[in-house]
Length: 484
Image (cartoon, rainbow, N blue to C red; front, side, top):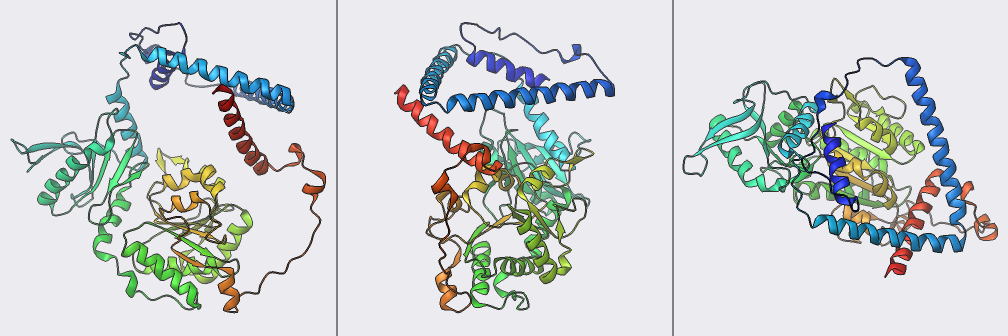
């Protein structure tokens, strides 16, 4: 409630015209009424009210869409939108001229966010001076002393990780050098270098400086995950020397794709790869063999395979059960409680499971999966479900049958690749030449769209969403031109 108050204050101060908000306004959480129970009849009434509200909103949106279909109405609305945007920009500029002296209590906000994320990862802090504000010596300062904001201890009394927290208004990366010095001090004292986290409460970074450069992360790792990350410094095997299971893949281009992904992970210290393979070339078998190799080499413990359709998920689950039965594959679409080493899921299912908590702990935390495979990687997936890839701190592999020169720019950018240069590619022409596939045969079929056109109400939900996104961009550019 206190954070909602601060947000509401900022919103009013920034956008309210001709009204000055008193910066001394404060939130008194203590004066809020405490309600321990809510009658079931009241909940039913609330649900009925919500249902009526959504019906009314849907009706209004439908009516507005019908009105917007008129060219005259569309032009009028575009001009009105441009006018309102200009008015809002003017109000915001005028309000910004007055210094914001409101006390947002950023330190408390930062600590609340950090403590919440640590609690979701299973960490609790009961010993000030040991779990928090831990004193260290050997810092390059005049006195040589320092205090680590948070130390994440292992069961053996050695530090698994440390967290350096900076003020909310500062870039979290400002704590990188200081966190590294703290890690030096802890390593000198305990003989084990911890994983480094630094944050400003909103942005978080993880840095295992023995293996990878710093990278953003959505939270913190659990004790088991940190222990495994430190163990991997010594138990990981060289990927180039690890054999590929020929009972899973037996074609030269499949083995080549696996070796190139391994080179990117091991030699280039990359954490992402994109495979462009023609339909029917065995993409799923290839990633099954890759997952098997990475598991045997102690690079990966759990794998998540994502697809946009249930049929593809079921197909992948069957393939993993056949080629990698020891991984105990779990289909999260039909079984959300079982555990294994390989999980297959649709994007919406995983989006829902990410938010689930038990006793304030997340089942699927940031470090739960060490490898994520995206089937049929294409642009719309990233626009709608990109949060999944931001949330999990894992190696990432994309699979697509789209020719490499037709893969959109966003796809290459997601995998940190130069446009048109995937990690490995095996196209249809090569597959036909090698006699693994046959060339396509053209068939002329009358298509309803060019002949009869389309009606918005006849589109699927995904098609409506894509059409709305395109139309919104066109309206924005039209309004922008009118305004200019």
